[in-house]
Length: 261
Image (cartoon, rainbow, N blue to C red; front, side, top):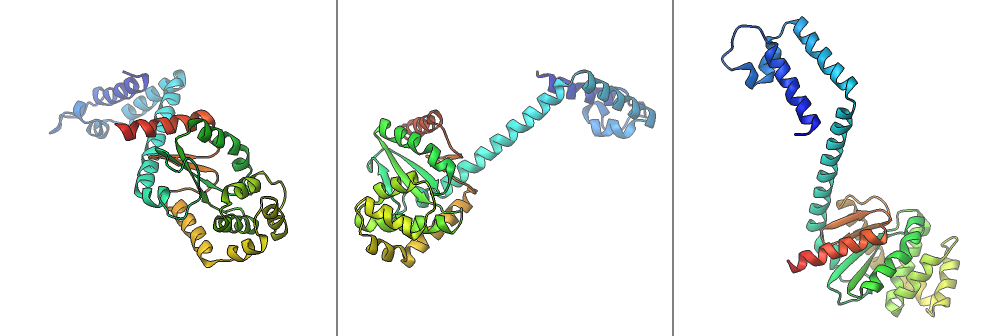
């Protein structure tokens, strides 16, 4: 029995054994609430003093209590995240127009919600690509999620427009490695650098269909409780923040194991 549980049990017993009022229909030792109501004010003060002295002299009990509460909250949060991923699995993993990198026929799909102006997205990019490439069987889906202002939106619109010319991946990677503002001028220059027809790209970027796609990505993120970038999803696992290689590999392995189980 943990120290915290022993303390709580002892506290309940202390309440029960100090009750001196006439017997009630139910034994106070079986119901601490009844025992409390049977105590005199002096006895209540004595119990409070006992509990206070115990906590003061054994502060580890409080740390244990807070640790247990935190673990409980984390477990509940993970359960909510898994439920959200499961409820949105079709839109998350099988949206027909999402850009796909890695192995298109991979046995595990890794999804990243990203923003071109997100420093964390940029810092983790090579790590994610290394994990996907070294595994060889990961289908990597990009969810354009521009939340950091107008430049982010313009960059995402241009990136998604590059699909029509079959150059989403090189353009996406070039945009992620870009340092500086995302203006139509810079986006056009980068487009030319990777061999895109810049004039056509700008025209396609203004498509209402692309705007609708970005709105759907935002709705999906909100329904899953994703409010920042990057955020990753694989199987029923949601990983908010810049996940490291070990975390990504573990999530992929767990998802692969579950699909075979």
